[in-house]
Amino acid sequence: MSKLDTACQQLVSDVSDALGAAIVDLSSGLLLAAHHNVPYFTQSYLDAVAAAAVDMFRGKNVSTVETLLSNQRGTTVANSIKEVQMSTDHTYHFMSIVPGKENCLMVLITGRRANLGMGWSALRTALPIVSPLCP
Image (cartoon, rainbow, N blue to C red):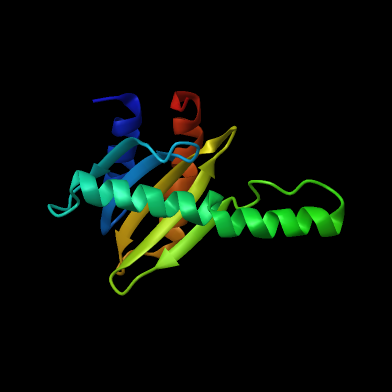
């Protein structure tokens, strides 16, 4: 198990109702590390979630808006989204760019019984730990 996988495992164990955690390379869409405790989180499912995260942070529509903002402001706006929280019927997703690693994204997925503040606190605590481990 890699040190990044271990960091994901620790994050999942630190948060009540956590389902999984992962680190995604936003430049390639590859999953760099992951840990989960859900049987149906297959590799195909994890790859699809990683691709969706790339779209949210670096997708075509985001790039289009950043280009429009750059043109309006007269300064370059790129990779401006740093954190996203998303809710589904049964889960919360906490996502943050890894500090100092603009192309790495850490994701925490929890059930809806999780405390939102605890989710963010645990994710933000893990970020400086994984930063030196990310490429």
